[in-house]
Image (cartoon, rainbow, N blue to C red; front, side):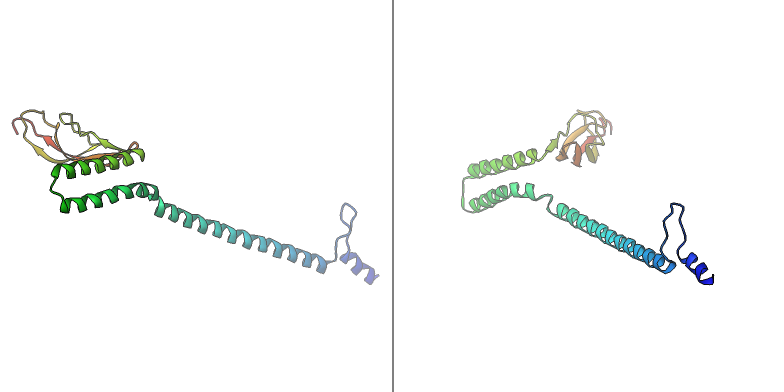
Length: 177
C-alpha cells in the first residue's frame, strides 16, 4: 500500500487523462527548457549588439565619406587652379590669366549648383533679413533707409533650403546717423 502511494505521487493523472512524468524527469525537462531559453536570449542579445555595432560603423562610414562625390567632382577644379598658378608664374598676359581663372570659377559654380548649393542674393537696398544676413557694420548712408543692406562683404549660400553661410553685409544707419 505504501509502495502504491509513492507510485501514485510519481505518476499523477492530468485532467486529460495522460500521465505526467515523474518529478525528477519534469525538473530535468524544465531545466532543459530554461537552458534553451537562456541560450536563445544570449544569442538574441549578441545579435542585437552586433546589429547595433554594424549600424554604428556604417553610420561613421557614411559620415566620413559623405562628401566623396562632391570632392571627386571638385578635383578637376583643383587641377585647373594648380595649372593657373603655374601659368601665372611664367605668363605676362594678365588677360589670359583672368580669363582662365574665370573659367575655373564658372566650373566650380556649376559643380556646386549641381550639388544643390545656391548663392544668397545680398539684396542691396532691401531690408536686413536675419534669416539670410549677418550684419558686420551699421553705417550712415544718404541713399538707403535705416536697416537696409548697403553692401555685401561676403556671399552667403544655401544648400537646398538650408542656409549654410549667411551673407555678411553692411547695413544703413540712415541719413542722420
